[in-house]
Image (cartoon, rainbow, N blue to C red):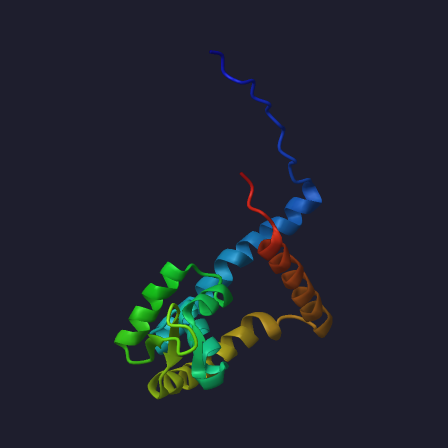
Length: 163
């Protein structure tokens, strides 16, 4: 039996201008989350992901969301979210309960203590977001960043991963 012939396709390499756009974006993707995490860890003893989970719960009716919905919002797996929720539960900021509409699902609920912790952490978080991003850009640049982010996020949400 012979091996099937492999067809090697040359990668569609980035040209100079594409590389000049990509490299700063790649640096931003790595360094901005690290800066946000560092501030929240230092000032509030939580990660940016934990902050995002608490914030999303705080904006939901009854401060409650299905775990699967929360995982999709946070761009995390249900497994990763479960670990984070367990950590937040141990701090008394969140608890889990069966979904009253469908017992196959589990809801995450933000406690009053968790809401208070979020309210305490939010001013420092918004200060660093403003300092690093919002105040560094003109109104026009900020609109462009929002547009670029929406386009890329939409592509991520709808593109099939390469094999």
